[in-house]
Picture 1 (tube, helix red, strand yellow):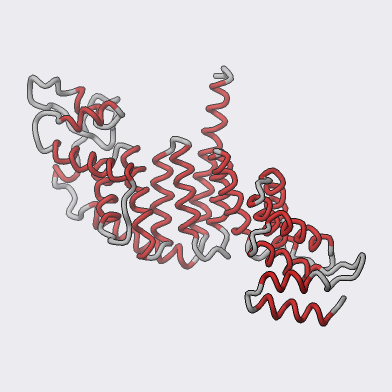
Picture 2 (spheres, rainbow, N blue to C red):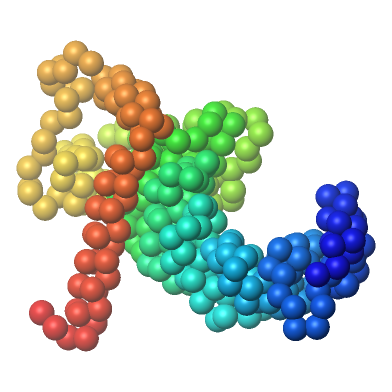
Amino acid sequence: MNTQAFELAKTAYKSGDWAGAVSALAGVKGAGEACGEADHLRGNALMKLGMFPEAAEAYGEALADVAYGHVGALNCNRGRALVAAGNDAQAEACFQAAVSDPSYPTPYKAYQALGNLYTKRGQALEAGTAWRSAAIDEANPDPSGALLKLGGCFMSLGRPDDAVEAYRTALDFSGDNSQAKIYAELGLAYMASNRIAEAADAFTKAASDPTYQLTGEQQVSFTAAQRALAAKQGTTPSETEQMLAGTGYGAADLAANDGFGPTTASYDPLDPLGKSGEFIPSPEDTGFFSVTEEDLMAADKDDRKARRKHNHRGLKVFLTILIILVIVGGVGGFAFYKGYG
């Protein structure tokens, strides 16, 4: 190995002279010689220059140097280079190899890359599994980001209740400067779960952050939630309620009111579809509870946040249960599609 060229290359690399580093690194190895460190640096520099196929090749040469090690990091980097070069199939294999390396100290990076890859393909179940693994990796400094993505996967799978739990857990691990987006997505999940009041509250918290702008879908849902809540103060269904009924929101209320008489039913969170035929009074109406639901949720959130930030164990249990439910649901749906049961 040409040590003089290697030192020159490292100096250029540290100064951000990527082209100079690549040029110097080309003269480090002799014919048939292996030098994983030099190839690793060359791959990184080529990535900075946007030369993705060449970077993937450099990482491949570094992997050939068994003595160098760093298998997980090299495979993860090579996978990223292949994705950037448009070779998703080979990239997936690299990411899988990365997470299979027990010595890889930051597997969440490869899981996140897999999550993005599967999301791009529209494979929500596989993406959710990857994001869940990224979230529970104790080396991950920001599990809230992975949990936010996991919630999106649950929404794509038609599991808004599970999405709600993922988003609420994301809030426990997030900083105040990153909560607005989570609250906005939580609002959409609440709306999909027909929890209008909670949706309005989540959207309000998101909108209160001057640095965050609600998306078009979020703003429409926020307005619909506000109007639906306001309309419930009256005795007849509003146009907003009728619109919501067409998409599954407030259907039980409208069914009980034909427009010719007073409303005889109200939204029942314990029986939203009216299947029981009986209305269960809200605790707020009976005066049974002396503490509000908001007080209980706030106290519970503070306690959970303190415990989860100390240890990811609770997060692992929670996400394990969620992913099992998704897998069971997927198998059941497949069986139904095939005509079983």
